Length: 438
Image (cartoon, rainbow, N blue to C red):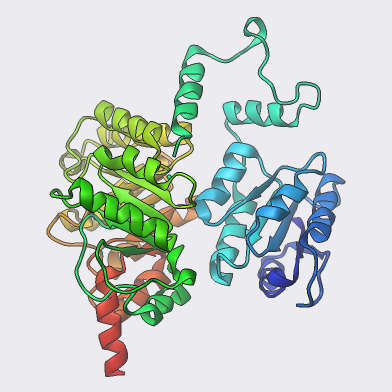
């Protein structure tokens, strides 16, 4: 594939890494600059990349600045360009699958080289194939309509489509996830250097429980899901989590459904996302209830949904039921532009069952599979992560390791095996001990 790539001074080093990555995969790369770390204006290079895409010289474009936002704005001024910023695999996939984006913008100050390469790979290999998404992309690119919906007499929007549109508008009021239970131990605030080691290994999301000591360094905050899923969580405890998230600028706050609206309202005006769990922690609710719970959470402001599968149905061999169960959530998430994560509760499954449910999650087009709720008899193992990743990796899905990290070697093996998010509150103490031993 022919690809144009550009960067300002802040993205220069990442640009070099990505060019080497793309060349190694056999792509033809057109480097439009900048050529050094000397101060440079990102709009100039964003326009060069955009014009290469719009003119047909290349099939896709990649532009890197500090945050990726300004370059996206600049590129979208060029007719024929649909630029999308991505900060993880899910947003890259969504930009292609839903919007047929032809130019990717990245923030060198937000992500590292390994993650950036993964994001680019997803961006280049994902296609926009569903008719409903293609129709909406046509509305974006239609110069005569200005992207407006045709009058009722000529519209092909069904009543179901209109219901979804209304639900989406309601859901725009507010938006990651962590393990189901908070594990005590040294936290990111008290041991930031250890947390940074996990990030250097490739982890993109850490978990930080309430009332953890220590101020979290600003450069780590955007990797952290601030989580409170305890059954005895009170209004005051949830408010504390909201206040801490606003103070530190965490990536997300993950709560039970009854708190979603409060969290989304409390985080409005910040970049912190809201996450909710569905069917939590047993997964035994009926599929229609899980679907409604998902849609309600999204309307209340959730941007990520962690659903628990029906373990009993899976172990009974009723795969058709489990697939419908997952689809009830993933379809609601796609309608509401939310990320879907499927918790499979690995401690209760055989390896054959883990493979089967990962295949079902892939068929349902979930964004993640996740090991556990934190409420079962055990959590993740490196072997589980390797197995799950081997099943879903080809679909561009991600794996979250939640709980069960026994030592630093296991944590590293999990990440090397494919985990891109880990619950790290408990793991901090283990890695700290390993460092002291070394």
